[in-house]
Length: 401
Image (cartoon, rainbow, N blue to C red):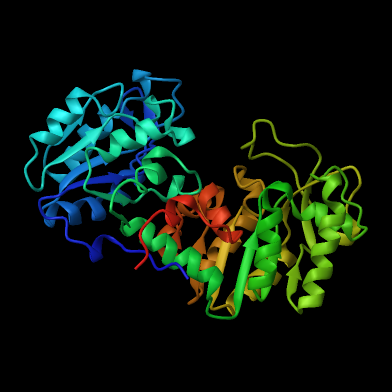
């Protein structure tokens, strides 16, 4: 389906290689508090260095309004120098491709690395404006996109520039996302089980519909399950509900039946009197109710023990599992049981297990199951759009094989 040229298909020796990474890391002052994204980018960068490319890195960081030094990538250049064991020269131009950057590129030897300033210092970056795309292309012979987190957006630094250079390929991180996420949905080893959680049905409308066509079993948990249960005519008490999506939920249940797919909903629910404040209050009292006997005065905040058993069984027989969205209010230790159980079930299976970014990725890592999963996506919005079956501009812009 997605056969894109990668860094393994090209020769970069002596060439200027502009590599778009995802260095959108959390900062406390100028200290990087989580460097997962830096570490994830290293294999592609090291490959380009080893092949004798002149490596020019670029990325956005946060959502600055213009050139705001609080969002400078200077701390990233410093940390990358340590991780790579060689200097990553920082070009500190507010215009990103300015005199400093051009002089630094001019002086590069094969295997050197420089990092440009935050691409979002240029307001036209997010609008895919031509002038900035041309500036980026003017310092590059080859473009490598390794930033899956922004692949669902058409920006200058991932799409605009790719259209202006002859050679545009994907890096190892992007390749992995395409292999796992893209191919899991288009060409899964069956049985294929998809698990969707999170708060809102509205966020996952197209994902639910697309996955029903592709998977064998669709499991629904999290806040969005209560809209489905209400659509079945059940009392859901004070649980989260999207009244405008009740008909849609009915349609999806009918669609599953028509296609001969299993659509699993919670059969019991962990209910509480009031939403915890603070959210992680460990003293909160819970009641377990069957799905068809929910207490009208309470709010459902996690899947119950019978549902955990049902969902874990469904995962056991699977050969491919995609999971996006927690099963309950996993930020609270008392209401995290369902999410933990699903993570444990995925960790124990031999299936290909793919975690679709966002909260599920955070939950899996937090619970210590990260290394037991086949793939944890680095993109929240991008992985959701991939699961919807949408073409991602950042992927589409790379050359086909």
